[in-house]
Image (cartoon, rainbow, N blue to C red; front, side, top):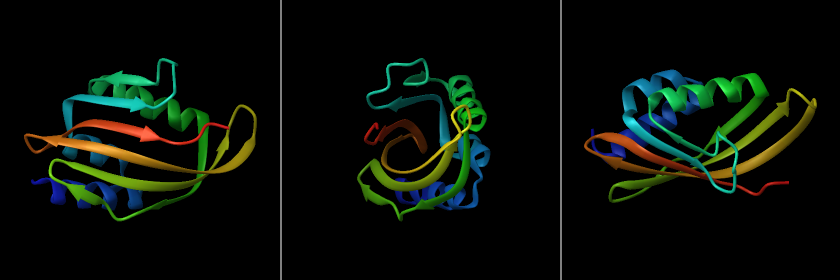
Amino acid sequence: MNTDQIASTLVDCCRKGEWEKAYMELYSPAIVSIETGDDSEMGHIEGMEGLKKKGDWWAETFDVHHVEVSDPIVADNWFTVRFEMDTTHKPSQQRSKSSELAVYRVADGKIVWEQFFYDRE
């Protein structure tokens, strides 16, 4: 798949909540995932095992009420997607809305890099 196809497929999976499908079909085993400004262990993940651990952490930490996913913007081997989320932080029971930009890099037909940009409150 080329970058346009990968971007469109990722957006489709995200809109359907098919996160595992996206990881298995679109991501490189050597994926790097970065949460900008996050110094915790989830802030910089490498490899599919780390990505799965991050996904498990997210599911254990947040209830997701609604997600809106923009159409992708593609430039060469890069694309970006905006996520608008309504979540509840399970430990504190604090509900909030957030907006983030995700930037992805594609190489050899797979997503090899993802980085998330958002304001921390």
